[in-house]
Image 1 (cartoon, one colour):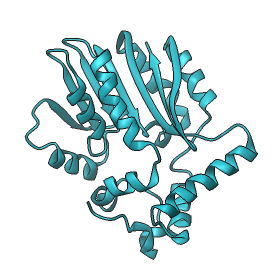
Image 2 (image 1 turned 90 degrees about the horizontal axis):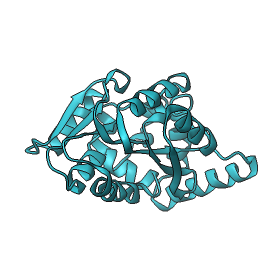
Image 3 (image 1 turned 180 degrees about the vertical axis):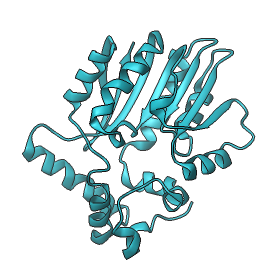
Length: 238
């Protein structure tokens, strides 16, 4: 596993965050050290796939990066005749994903904008820390398209960084997240540069906003199943 040292480099540290080759090379380490609860969300995807994926249906990992969620779905599925489709718009991520999944012919990897992908006959869809990188004005539409392409009773898993409605608690949760990074050997400079790089690139919302959007899109039920500081994972049923 290559170590994430991107924000030690002054040149890279002054640029907006993008999913380029430098990020793809260190992405597993970046996730492990930056997102508390990430491993638990991936583990749950496999368990949920075993429960909700139906025979002859499609499963989508939208914003797949290196394919961890797609692989977890594939490994968890018990039903026959299912397709797992992993999609990302980053060439660097897709190239690395294909390397990670080499030899696995049951996961279809696509280089595409997730807003252009047709969701059809889906019993499970995952967006693991993806929606937060879309313009807020585009979020309602993509969730409606996902819901429209899912079977009744299908499962949608949405993991996101969020903001708290209470400003005092939001400050506390941000501090706790930064302490998590310090404990994973990120320096104050790296933390500061990463935060600046993500400004106006990653735009978080509240849990209430996410649940309202899911309801408006056509999901009958939703609940937060995992929260760790300012990171949450929500399950929604079509």
